[in-house]
Image 1: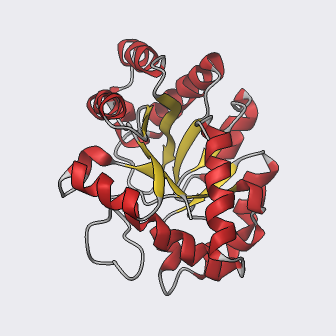
Image 2: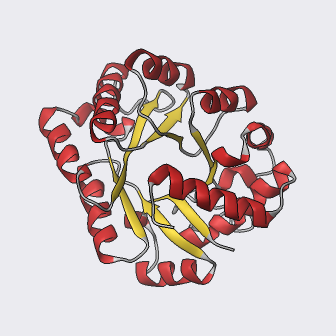
Length: 254
């Protein structure tokens, strides 16, 4: 079985990167997408994608850092996004749970990066926390990019249905395996097979049986197994579908 980790933070791994990528390859992970959340991590994502086979990058300003977004930052993100190894704009969005940045700044940064994704014709990967209705409203008002990815999905079945109705891909992380994550498993059951993605969000959100330990890309296999158990679809089918979906959504080579 082949897998793609559609969302991880290689720059934050708490282990040797080369060894982590070797372990991932040994588990059948053929590609990993390392994510930019600010200018330094976006630059590093591009560097890592350039240096490591099977690694691709995204660039963007996370809602936590939206207070720092201005024209100069936006121009640098656009310059980075032009690199061939950059497959998406992200992670971007709204987070009204922690509010590290003001809502106004978050909306401004999100609006600018929606337009960037559309201008460059690249997918957009979204971080959404306690802000699902606001994200949907802003996307509808602005007009969404052609490809949307709802990263580390945290809603229930109703929100998942809305995401799919908008043409989005819904990505599940390790928390779908947690004992009390009933709403996430309900959401997984309403997402069509051709709209499912899996991710580790490593080094965060280690899936069972690795919870409590630092996460890494090889554990996307366990995320896939949890999604398979939730949906009563075989692990083989989940592996094949999510790999094909990631290739299609992010325009990765087969």
